[in-house]
Amino acid sequence: MKFAFLLLAAQAAAPAPGIDGLPIDALPQQALPARGCAAYLFSTGTTRTLAAMATADPATLRLVLDGKTIDLPRTGATGAAQLGLNAESVYRAGDVVATVQMTVELRQNLTAGAAVPVATLRLDREGRDTVVVPLAGLVGCAG
Image 1 (cartoon, one colour):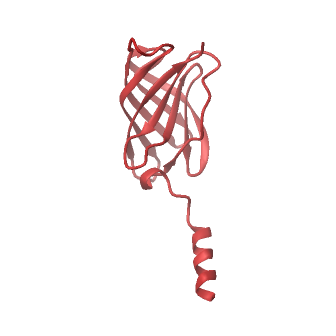
Image 2 (cartoon, helix red, strand yellow; image 1 turned 180 degrees about the vertical axis):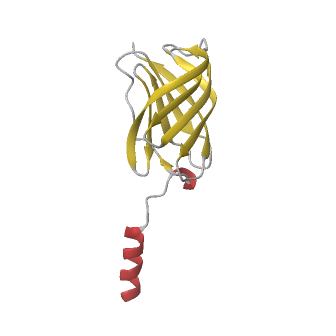
Image 3 (cartoon, rainbow, N blue to C red; image 1 turned 30 degrees about the vertical axis):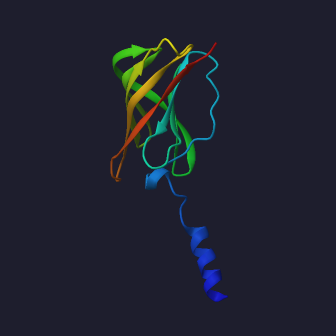
């Protein structure tokens, strides 16, 4: 009985696991943006789930970090832009810097959006290891 109680206490104290042991967790279902487009980026590792959403207007990145949903404003962008989303965008708030690199492909079989066959999310936080997460997904645009 005492062992079961200790086991329950240990489980309650353990931090919520991230996607494949990473410090980011799954985003809940997200709606299309009210205006412009958004890239819905899914993890491509063992666990396949929505990991990040990058919106064109306003230019933000939404993800779940340390159990909290956060929106990081875009502070820089380079490369060709498709549907308002650049090949590389940097998002920053406080000590969190997230860099998203993605390939946006317009396809005839996709209307009001595009494919993102390859993307990466690089997460830099002061005093912590840098994490790079492989992603892929779709771009959806407001009607």
